[in-house]
Length: 585
Image 1 (cartoon, one colour):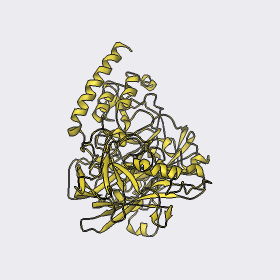
Image 2 (spheres, rainbow, N blue to C red):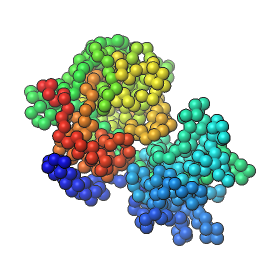
Image 3 (cartoon, rainbow, N blue to C red):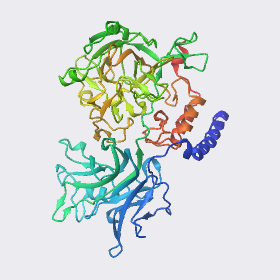
Image 4 (cartoon, one colour):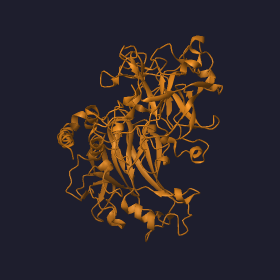
C-alpha cells in the first residue's frame, strides 16, 4: 500500500466515524428502523411483559401474548442471526440472517386467528414502503416441507404454489384506502426455473395506499388444510420509509464543463465552457415526429433535437400536450424517434442522456409551484435496434396528486422519466439511462432488441393528468436485489398539465455517453477525487429510502442498497484514477 493510500485510509476511517456520529442530524431516518429498540445480542422480545406492543420511531406495532400457552401473535422484534435454524425455533429469525442493509434489529410477525398484526402511525401520512423477507420458520417449511405443511412445488416441482403477504391501508376513520400484495413465494410460472421463495430483504412500495393511519398485515397460501393455512403464518419487516422525501436521487449529467475549474459544471454561456467530453456522440437524424395537436410552428422543428445540448430555451422541439377531450377520445400522445451515427451500447455506468428544458422553481406560489421543485413535462423513453420493436424503460412516479398547469414536482419521486433534471437558467443537465435496466425484458432476451446495438431512441410525451401510469416494471429500486422483476407498480403520473404552445415534453438533445471506467467517479467529472470522497462520506451509513442516500455511492457489487465500508473500499481502490476522456481536450 502506498503512503498516499495509507493516508487516505486513515482519512476515510476518521471521516467515516464522524459521519456515523452525524447521521442523526445529517440523514433523516425512516419512519421506523427498529434500531432504537434495545436487545441483548442474539435475543428477541415477544411481548411476554404484557405490554401489548412496542413503539419504534413514529410507529406502534401490536402484540398479543398468551401467558397460559407461552404464545404470541402480532409483532415481536429480534436481532438473531442464525439463518440455518429451522422449525418453530426459527420463528424469531429473518432468513436473510440479520436486518435490512446490515442493520441489527428487525421485526417479525405472526398472523394469529383473532386479529392481524397492525402497525399504527403517530400521524396520518403516506408510507413510501418497507422491506420484507421470510422468517426462517416459513422459508424452510416451504423449501422442504414439514409435519404440517407441504414442500412448495410438490414432489414433482410442478405444483403451482404461492405465499402472499397482503398489506391493507386504513385512514383515521378505519376506512380501507387500498391493498398491496407481495409474493413471499411464487411457484406459478410455467417455467420452474422462475420459482422462488424470498430469502433477501425486498422493498415493497406502499405509496398506492395513499394517506393512512394504520397498516394491517395478512397472509394467504396455496397450502390450505382442514384447519386453515398450513404454511407458517410468519414474515419479517424492516426499515419503514416515509414518503415525505423521495428516494430516487441520481444526479443529472452536465452537458458543459469548465476544464479550468476541476471539470465541474459550467453555464453554457460561460466563455470557459466546453461540451462535456464524457459524451461520445449525439442524435444525428429524425426518423419520425408525431406531435399532439396544437404545437405552435416555432416549436415544431424536430431537427432542433439533433446535435449537442445548448441550454438555449428556444432550441427545443415540443411533443405537444393532450387536453381532457383528446385523452377521452383515446388520442395518441406526441412522440419523436431519433437515430445515431454509431449505435448505443450497454456498458459500465449510464449509456445515454436526454435533455428536456425543465427548470427549478425559485419561489412558492398558489399556482402549485413549490420553491426548489421542478417545473417539468415528462416522457417515457423507449429504445430499439431495428426501428420496429421498442422496449420502454421501467419508470417510477410517486407524485401524489395533480399539479395544475403551473405546478411543480419533487424530482426525487421520479425515476427513468425524461425531463427529470433541469436544463435552463445556466444549468444544463440531462437525465441518464442505463441499458442494463432493460436487460431482462422479454424482447431483449428474445433478441428483438439488442442492448449492444441500440440505433433508435423514442421519447413519448406523458400528459400529466394522471391518466397515464408508470408501467408494471422492475423492482422500484433501480439497483434491484435478486428477484426484483417480481415487483409491479401502477402509479398515475402527474406533471404540469395542461400546457399549450410548446406544450408537453420539450426535447433539446439526446447524448451518448462513453463507458465509465471507474465507478467511484461519483460526480462524473472524470476523476476519482476528494469531491467523490465527500459525497460518499455524506451518505455513509444511509440506506435506500433515507434522504441521505446517494444512489451512485453504492459502489460495491452486488449492490446492497446501503453505503458502507465495502463502498469505501471500492473508492480507495480507484483513488485518483482518471477517465481516458479527460485527455480528449
